[in-house]
Structure formats: C-alpha cells, structure tokens
Length: 317
Image (tube, rainbow, N blue to C red; front, side):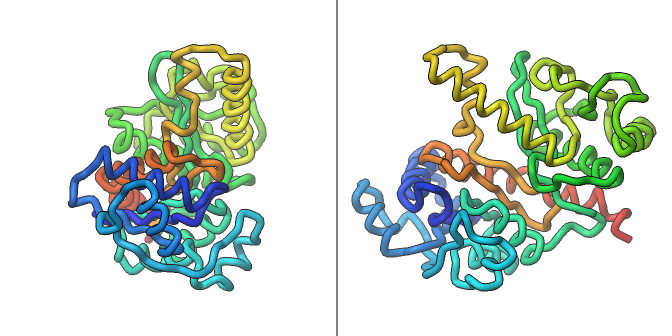
C-alpha cells in the first residue's frame, strides 16, 4: 500500500507533516505500507535528519510549488502544476499511490479530487464526511460538512446511502441507523427539500432510515449517520470544535469531551470520488497528521471506494 502525503499542506507545514510521518512509521513499521512524501524534498530530508529519522524509510516526490490556504482553488489547481496537491492527485489518478492525504487548501483538494480522480459514475456530488462522538460511546457520522452548501433532494438522498456504506465499512456497523437533520422530529417538518428527502428515504430499502432528528440529538441520538447539507453540517462541526476549545480553556477534564479533539481523527474523507482522498484540518499538528495517515490506511483497507462504485453502478447507467 502506498499512501501519498502532502507535506506542504497545513499551517505548520512541512514540519508537522514530517513529524506526523515519523510518528506513523514508529507505530506502523510494516514495510508493506509505503509513505510517499510529496513536497520539498530538501526540507523533508533536513527535518528527518534533525529528528533522528532515516530518509530511506520514505519515498520522496519533489515539488517546487505550494497552493496556499488563501489561493483560489479554481485558479491555483490549473496554474500551479508542480504544487504538492496537483502532483499528488496526478499520482493518485495514475495509480502510483493508493490514497492521498493533505491538510492543505480544502477547496483545492475538492477541485483536484473531482477533476483529476473523477466522480464515481452515478454520483451527483461528492460529499465531505465528518464524525462527532456520541455520549454512548458511538460516533455520529455527519454528511455533508462543507463541500455542498446548497443541495437538491436527490443529492441528500445519495448522501444517506454514502453515509450508510461508510458506516458499514469504516466503522464496522452492521445496520447503521440513518437520520435526517431537521427542525422537528415529525415527518411534516422542515423546508420543501427536506420533506421530499424524507418521503424518499422512508421507502428506500438500501438504508435503515429512522426519520428526522433535531440539533439536540447530535450527541445523544440513536442515529449512526446524520444527513444534512454542507451549510448545516459545517456549522454543527465548527460549533462542536468551539465547545471543545472552551472546555480546554477552562481546564475541564472529561473523558467524553476529550473525544472531541480533532487530532484523534486526523481528517475527513471525500465520498463519491474514484480513489481515497483525505482532507485534514489546516491547523493539524504532528498527532493529527499521524492519524490522518492512519485514517487513509483504514479507508484503503476497507475497500470503501469499490463498495461505493458498486452501489451506484445502476444509477450511473
């Protein structure tokens, strides 16, 4: 397995990316997992040497450009052809690597995934999926969390199926419960789009649809998967991050709230593209980078992309 890591992506690149790669290698010395470091080779080798790591443990692909956080994705991706993100996606499209992970420009990662790797046939829009811890020890898989701020009903219906497949393969849930985020639990609640989605999902035998949930159910509800547009999902995700920050500032020690630390999860997957793509938080440190690589490994091993392609094969005809 070859995992491509963009070492130039993130606010603290390349140092934290390199430290994350070192930490991953220490925990996963398996030679069958090859880390391909994409970015400035000179900086990478210097950092590896500084921290007592051997450059021979890694494969390097040298690049000379960086897509910055403030760059326009649609302009930067075609213009900066020798950037770590563009080169990474080229390698992924050509199957030189099995997964690509970056904490760089989220928009550029989405644009690169769609235009280089391509959308799974039958998928209307790929989704960015996140997860939040529930009080019972489980996780609430949330999609979309920012890639699609405006969604038609058919897009949200596809998100429900994508989330169900993801929950089964990555979180090992046999029959994940799928819910629709709404302003009330009753079937008649919500806007026109959400009402239409409800009427379709309750007849879809491919998923275990349990109906509407409200915002207060995010961390305590029965659902394993929550469907919403990216506008709503991103607000929920960022609000959870804010509460975690407030708790940390107040030096409150709590096992449940400690699970909100994004560093533990590493990144979010783009569902609905033809190869594993993982996007990390821009402020990722070494721990988050290590877990992003680990998550990429898990997604590859789960054969998630193949399962999504099979599930949507009929819809793509």
